[in-house]
Amino acid sequence: METLTDNKIIELELKANQIRESIIEMLLEAKSGHTAGPLGMADIFTLLYTHILRHDSRNPEWSERDRLILSNGHICPVLYATMAHAGYFPVEELKTLRKFGSRLQGHPHKEWLPSLENSSGPLGSGLSQAVGMSLADRIDNGRSSSKYFYCLMGDGELNEGQNWEAIMLAGKEKLHNLIAVVDRNNIQIDGYTEDVMPLDSLRAKWESFNWHVIECSGHDFQALNEAFREAKGVFERPSVIIAHTVPGKGVKEFERMYEWHGKAPNKDEAEMALKELRTLGGKIRAEHE
Amino acid sequence: MPNLNPKLFDEDVEQVPIRKGYGEGLLAAAEHDARVVGLCADLTESTQMHLFKNKFPERFIEIGVAEQNLASVASGMAAMGKIPFISSYAMFSPGRNWEQIRTTIAYNNQPVKIAGSHAGISVGPDGGTHQAIEDIAITRVIPRMVVISPCDAIEARKATIAIAQTDTPVYLRLAREKTPVITNDETPFEIGKAQVFFDATDGIAHVGVIATGALVYKALKVAKKLQSEGIHVKVLNLATIKPLDEEAIIALAKQTGCIVTVEEHQIRGGMGSAVAECLSKHLPTPQEFVGVDDEFGQSGTPDELLEHYKMGESHIETAIHTVLKRKNS
Image 1 (cartoon, rainbow over the protein chains, first blue to last red):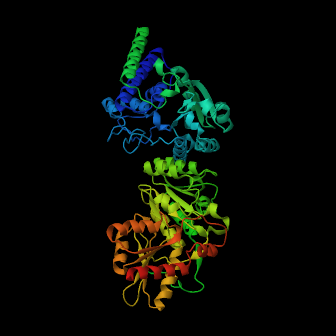
Image 2 (image 1 turned 180 degrees about the horizontal axis):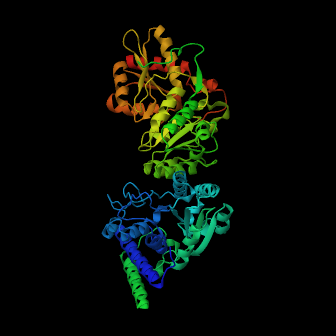
Image 3 (image 1 turned 120 degrees about the horizontal axis):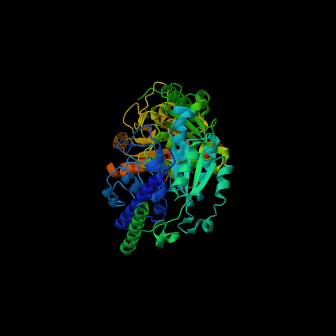
């Protein structure tokens, strides 16, 4: 996990931008689904699948792979889009999202798409599953295991008490190969997180449960890469990366608006969004040249 | 007729808690298969998981009083190839953690084995909060879930060993109090198979009784008593509530023409309902239901409670007379 070169960062930015375009296209086709979270998490997913995760899209069952457990299943458009761009299935299939018979269920179902690690949607149970996976791995491989378990979570879903049961257990068990990533985008369905149910100080909460806490921007590839590197260096505790993200990132009209948490763009909105993203892509390329 | 405990109807019939058989079965299953792991929510000894924990401490996870986490952590362990057994009181698991069981275990198709101890009203003095009498209903409705309610400790031991080798989620219903040992080591046990535990020795049975759990014993006692009065009762031990042994149930209904179901559970949604779903489709048959009639329990001794909530021997007998009248009217 070397430091990212400037070229690598530009490559990641372009890839993330492409994934955002896919997200908009698939949501337009589906006519329902979540927009803000997937756009906000596109950078983190891009980095994970291209640089952090040990995985093989041609051999999804590879037993030595790292596990990515998505807890807030409603942001699955970003998971599906990133997986498709990583070669797990054809990019064209993204347009079947939420359609009858599609492998890309409205909320992820592991049986329909076996390369997923878990099904999710009902909030608050992903971290428990990741804890279970890490515990099972410890029984088999001891504390020197080379596998990592990444649990991606929303901030709003931290309202669910089950998370804190899992956080308590992971702290007790010192699961060093468990790395949680919280999408700290400050919105949930009913409004801003601090109005609906305040989470701050989020850092202090996790720390008091014996977790190593790292905070960084969820859009700064270098900082994110460093955060994962730091997390992997911690041995006596699990780590959480509180990634500060902008919901709707990449499309100005969607950014920071909780109204975009749970709806899909219509044709006009999608066209505008795609135009913006294409312009952004052009800008990144131009700066590079 | 399978081989049963020869002292079944003796005054001093041996009494053992059903949950004890689970503890012994889990230990045996774990000795046989290294994939077996145990998780408990702060009730290790009273759910009898301590036998496993003492022998295999490295395969035991103490979750604390957190049943939702219990279910989903087990799902994660199963995803990595383990066969997790999770233990708590039935009221809390599968009670409190029903959605986690549905989504992270059953929907994910993970072979987690959910052992709910202290099920039924006979938990007694702890009172209504701790008496799980809705657990059969909420588990049998979940796709893929196998539901087993053993009649005694020996059957519980065999069931535990058997479910460790299946690839589906299972709910295993256990009781706290000592209850009579009905079967013996030779009695066969097969998931999904009901067994006739009492039959008319001279002639054809007039009524079929389908019972599950510890109340099978009361059903057998009633059948023996009525035999001397000339009423022939055939008793089916329905240990597996799902998948339902439809063949055995239909055969019993065909032969007897009337059915009484007996369970320590709410009538609505329970084993009797499962039997009625089967018979109303294949062979509509008069049926009487012995169980809790849409009420919560309270503190008391097991016998006081079984009497008060109409699951005693006299109530089984009354139900038999009622259903016979309906059949003959």
